[in-house]
Length: 89
Image (cartoon, rainbow, N blue to C red; front, top):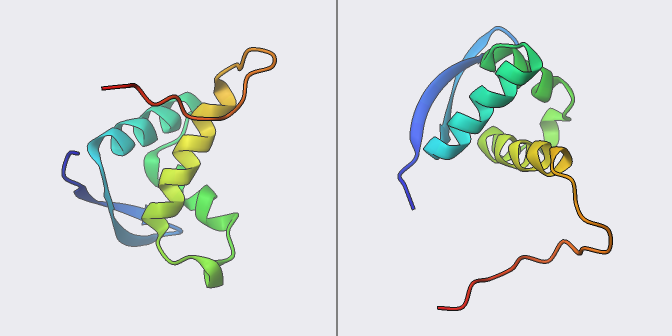
């Protein structure tokens, strides 16, 4: 797996750093563009919807958000399950 990249973003006017894999950074930028926001504004919106007491890692929250965003945007065929298909070696 690729190494994580640390980047700074402003969340609610405060500079913070997040450590994410490059694919998650790319996805976060794409989501922000789709929603007409900057990455900082998207992260601020996400943080404002969370109870700060229960956040262990904002980077983890972002990873889950990215996954849920694209899952919601992907149509599923009728009768399909959410199980992961694992390729045989």
